[in-house]
Structures are given as C-alpha cells and as structure tokens.
Amino acid sequence: MVSQDAKWLLEEKYRGEKSAAFFTDVKRLALGEPLAYLIGFSPFLNCKIWLDNRPLIPRPETEHWVKEAIEVIEKSQSATLGIDAAPVKVLDLCAGSGCIGVAVAKALPEVSVDFGEIDADLLPTIAKNLEENTVKPERYDVTHSNLFSNLPDKYNFILSNPPYIDPEIDRAEESVKVFEPYVALYGGLEGMEIITDIIKTAPYHLAIGGQLWLEHEPEQAGLIKTLGQKNGFSVTNHKDQYEVERYSNLTLTKDPTDY
Image (cartoon, rainbow, N blue to C red; front, side, top):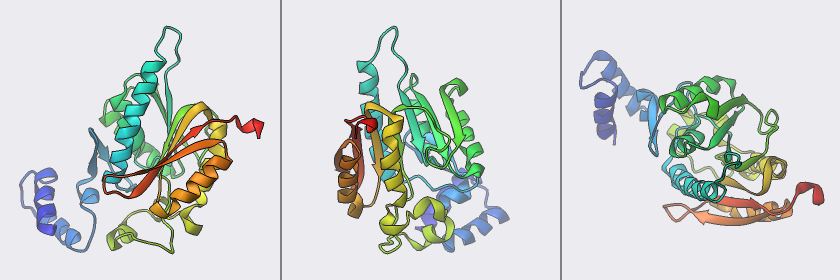
C-alpha cells in the first residue's frame, strides 16, 4: 500500500523527481499520514478538492450518495423549469472542504449552493475549491455557522455529512484518529447529537417537499427514521456501494408550525 501511495505521491506532488522532500514524505506515509494530506488534494466525483487546513478527507461512500443526490436535484430542477422559476437552492451543511456542495454546483450550473461550516479556518478552503472548480461567485455563499445559526434561508435540498461516529462503536482506522479532525468525526452520545440537532431544526429551513440527505453509521438508521418521522419527514434509509446502511433521505411532508 505504501509503495503504491509513494508512486502516486512522486507523480502528483514531485513530478517524478525523487528529491529529499519526497523521501521525507515517504517516511510520513510509512507513519500513517494520509496520502491526500501530503499531496494536498483529493478527487471527488469530477472535482479536485484541496485540503488546506486539513478538513475531513472525502470518502468514496460520500461520493456514492452525493452522485445520487445530484441526479435527484437535476430531476427536481427539470420539473420546475419556467420563466418565473427560482433556482433550486442547496445547502452543504457541516461543509468541511466543501466537496459535497462543490460537486453539486459543478454538475448543475443553474443551482444555487450555500455552505455552512463551524470551523472558520476552513472557509478559505471552501472558497478555494469553488474557484478551482470554476463555480461563479454569484452562485454561492460560504458562511461561518454552527449548524443553522447563521443560515436564515430556506432550501430545496440540504446535504450533510455531519460528525456521526459513536465513540463507543469506533471503527475509524488509527491514521484517521491521529490525523483527521476530531470535531468532524465524532458525534457525541451514540454519534447522534449533531444529527439530532439537524433533524429537529432542518424543517424550519426546508420548503415543503424539500429533502434532507444525511450520511450516518448503519446503527443509526433506525434512530434517524424514528426521529425524522417525529419531525415531519418521510424517511428512507439507503445502502452504499458496500451494502452498508450509510445514508438517509428525509423528505419534509409537514410544516413545522403545524405540530
């Protein structure tokens, strides 16, 4: 594994030159430091995602459901086309690197995408990734926000890969625990603290028929379904490409002021 990663590192970062810096990075690889941090970026769908200030590294599981979400958003957009139709509004919540929202914005040029992220150090990273992937500034807002605290708008779609690891059921590899941001990984009791806040608050930020997409642990699927239904959503749990219940689609069916 290290030798394959070293080859990729040599090609992507050092353009084939085996310099002293390259051999230093090989040693860092051997100590478990993620390749993506060493080369400085990660591919995500059709995007190049820079990892300045070390946000969570994008995962294939996330790519899987975001690709599906893009297809659903595109169909929704087609269904509402018209002279007076407002653009579909999407929120990437707990945005991190911004990979989810950037992928949506790049794939769907008519969609408006906002980003909410609690770590102020990552806001320039999100902006850099939008620029890298040629998303026009008038199509997005990047906001420093603790969940919805600074996000007053309503959206058609909210997409989120929140912190959801349960400290009691911690499958994370050692390199993830050592090098990736704790705040982006761990979700408190049962891994559900952030997810619970999102599900309870999202109805006030979605239009009726709007959708909340959440990534989560398989053990949380039932909890999310129950909590979502209590908060006005119809909920479906979905498996990822590895046959693991990894994400859920919550569609708002009731106005939160009615219950």
